[in-house]
Length: 187
Image (cartoon, rainbow, N blue to C red; front, top):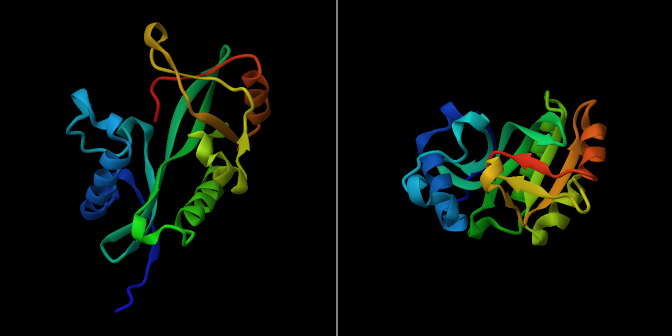
């Protein structure tokens, strides 16, 4: 029997438990380092302070592909910027290669472009940079990402990609050439 796969979106507090549980299970497998120490039994996909907004494809109660957009503040040089970022992008193996994640990234781009952020940012491993570039994200060449508190900040191995979303986007991108992007925590 063929089941229809449908696009859905929810605020974090309205995400149905059955879909949240599947997303959390997948996250635990794909990014186990986010579920260690005090976060070993965490019950959130992205910290609630980041105001996650979930975009997904599901067949009934079965999760097919998931993405969430978070909103936070980062600093570059002496300036702070409100950014929106897609994160937790994943597609269950049985559905890979069918374009579900590509569609979710396109929906996220539309939402970020219509939002109130200063700039869209995205961090990913080098092997995913081309995927996001095809969706309209621009690699910030040579950009450095510092994650963590000042005394314990770590340089991230991720690539930084940006997307102009507001009038301050150009200043953000120009400042990245001289200063690292500082985030409280990697997302």
